[in-house]
Image 1 (cartoon, rainbow, N blue to C red):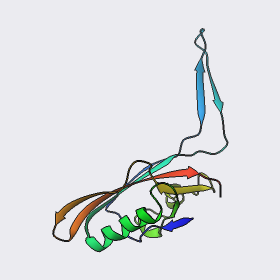
Image 2 (image 1 turned 60 degrees about the horizontal axis):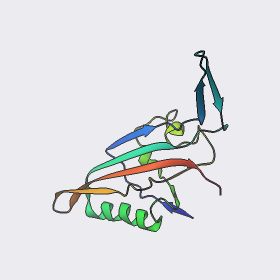
Image 3 (image 1 turned 120 degrees about the vertical axis):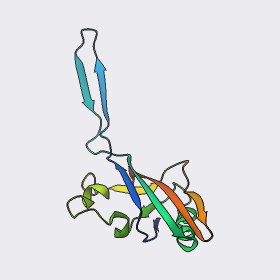
Length: 135
């Protein structure tokens, strides 16, 4: 099942590209050999910061986390999450340039973190992971 992430523009976004599954081995003579174990990368990371957002927006984020059952279900990310990136960069940030089957989900063991900054206003930090998942 896919859960819709709320269309809230983040204040900051940090993206780590997915990694190709490569293993290295160094022989006794010092020669390095590398082997690729798959044709597609996985495990991208997307950290989203929402600063000074309303409690309504915090509730929408927490509701998406609850509906997705944490890291269980994948997320559909709205274009608002990638606002500020140009059209050439967006396919890398959403993962579609790396692998057509990449799905975003909440990072396992990292629920959204909420810090209250004023009555009715909070900062929220969300960690997402881009994975290759079977449909």
